[in-house]
Length: 182
Image (cartoon, rainbow, N blue to C red; front, side, top):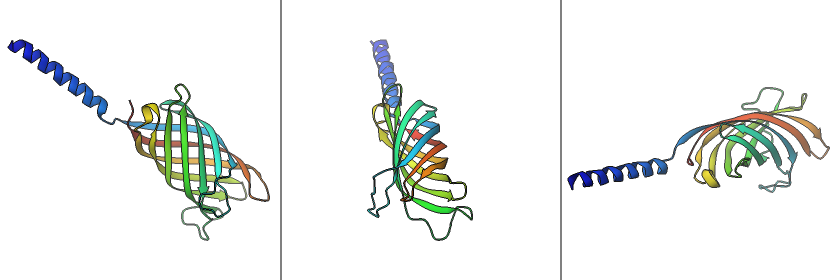
């Protein structure tokens, strides 16, 4: 009888340990190299009459390939640059969100930007961006995703009309650590 109780005790301990392992959030490094296009959108969350942009692209990541869409909106240009090089316009980020859809499963990972700045060089029509943010859930295996990331990218304005509407290409890298999922 003692042997039987010991076996049941070990079985329960192993089941609990396995269950706890699955319940614990697992940190995973996330690295994404991506290419995208950007076009002036219709979203104007601060009501200042200047719409944000909509970005669409493909991301090759440590979790596989994702299709993504994002929207972003900027604050007005700073009168004096704080972080951007001389000769560029410094434009702080107002807000941005993105949805990354895993191509093989359709599961989605949500990201929210917490800060960022664009440096626009009017001579080369190039924009460099550095931003930070958080993973904010999703669907499927990403439903409980949390964590932080940093992003660096470069864009070139391909078309800019007199009203300020733009179309651009973007390439960049997003790196971070997320918790949750399996």
